Length: 169
Image (cartoon, rainbow, N blue to C red; front, side, top):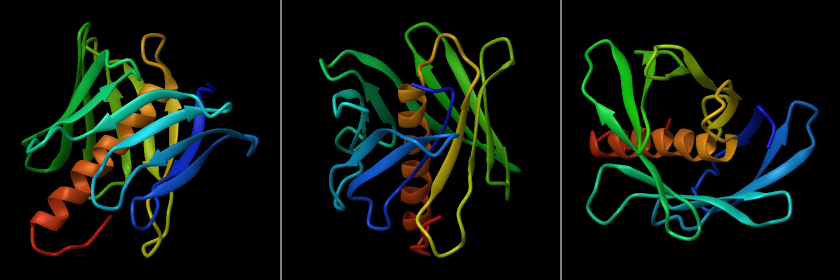
């Protein structure tokens, strides 16, 4: 898949949504399986599932795996005062995902503190979240990073609804 892609969540977090490249060509799809859960599949342009993401039962961690069940990694929230901070833990490495407190831009850093990827929300206030993802990594696929971004989004939505405001960002 391409190194720069655009995709979005659906308002009710269910149904299928397209993945586009910089030329606005459809290059894949995200299947948001249910409005009552947060699981998804990232599909290539032929409709084949490449990566899956979901919360395990009663867990705050977002698991990412291949369709055959092979675990790729997990996204978890980390406590931080003046920024949003997450970690993506794989078998080979730990990536830090960080963003200033009120920013919509995120940086994914590898263990050497080099940029592995960046993503940002590019939507308006009352729309479902839309993202621009730029992959600079040779070890993480764009499909895997889409699942990471959607995991961060799912954790943030879960945290904001648990905070009592019910607002979806």
